[in-house]
Amino acid sequence: MAAKSIYTKLFGRALLSFSSRTLYHSSHTLSTMASLSAHILIRAANRELEIPTGLFINNELSYGKGQDILAEVESLNNGKPFKIARDFDIGDSIQCLRYYAGWADKITGQTIEVDNKTKLAFTRHDPIGVCGQIIPWNYPINMWAWKVAPALACGCTIVMKPSELTPLTALMLSKLIAEAGFPPGVVNTIPSLGSVGGVALSTHMDVDKVAFTGSTVTGRKVMEAAAKSNLKKVSLELGGKSPQLVFESADLEQAANWACLGILYNTGQDCTAGSRLYVQDTIYDKFVSLLVSKAKELVIGDGFDEKSGGGPLVSKTQFDKVWRYIESGSAQGAKLALGGQKRPGKGFFVDPTIFTDINANMDIIFGPVLAVGRFKTEEEAISLANDTSYGLGAGLHSNDANQCMRVSSALEAGTVWINQYNLLNNNLCLDEYTSVKAIHWNFGEKLDWPL
Image (spheres, rainbow, N blue to C red):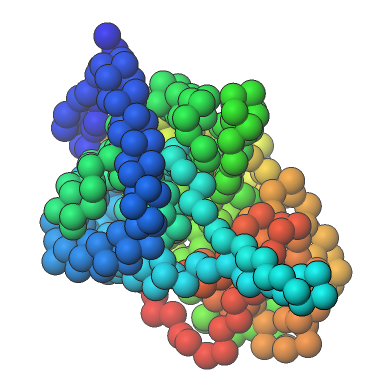
């Protein structure tokens, strides 16, 4: 019977442990059955809309009252600073809950006149049913809200598997769900290994949909397992190697702030992290100098220190992976403009690291490591930005409106930020390229740095 330990990211000490085998053989099967039963009861009572609408608001209010406690646990859970968890992750999640609560009674069908207007036909949107949801370790609270809120608003029931590295806040949120008055079995949480609970949800014949956020490699496995089981519906939000472009007309001070936010927020552990930065040749040296000075201002440290704007990486595995990339870049002769030295002492800390004048490695590093290159023309910038197999996000900084329109249209990314980076809205999609493109254009809001 395998036991999985949860470690503090600050000191690497075990907080608690759980048995993945026990969870798989008991909780998983029972949770799926409970979720299926709850879905059948909700549909039979014709309460798909009433339950989410009223209780969502109750849950959102309960959620708000416990913000400090949730933020403290999230800092232990993930390593991010308490103030970031409280002011950003939890605040954004409450907005998400509120947004989808508003949708719960507005999901309606159509009535259509047919056969030369002698008859009426109508459509309706029925809940999919039992949704398996697999969330990652980089934003545990946000990902919980992003997955749970729309599913409940549509009248679905849920079996949630948080990351085995960061299950604590998902378990706390499950308690809030119960306190809000949701019927038993509507939301079920299983802390389990991906190779156990994730596989089970992807293959289970009574799970009608699986939603996964994580790596591209695992996403392929989820899709394959879903197809081989009951052809369940699948939604995937996977990795990226996102570019940012800085043109000579940009506000360089603000562009440097946004570039730092793009790669250093959440210590670079972000699917849309702007890890490739391309700067126009005419401003390259000036901008890199400004960028380095900005990155130095960010304090990476104890999440409960008010000065900290970034915390440790989530695990020793992630820490070792990031350092392999840093050491590989240095060994290949890349120029280090900042960072590159390991800290003494305990904790999975990696300081901001900037390489210059190199071609960006296309592997997803998922750490505070930025590769900076240069370009001469707009066409070259677009070509460099699009030279990737990923298409999740991209950013550009320019005060030429015509250029902003041209470049944002040409960038092969599902989300494009203009004169900002990594800010999202609940009423816009976050999707891979070739689906719907969302363009966020900032017309004047200034970013204060550091966080």
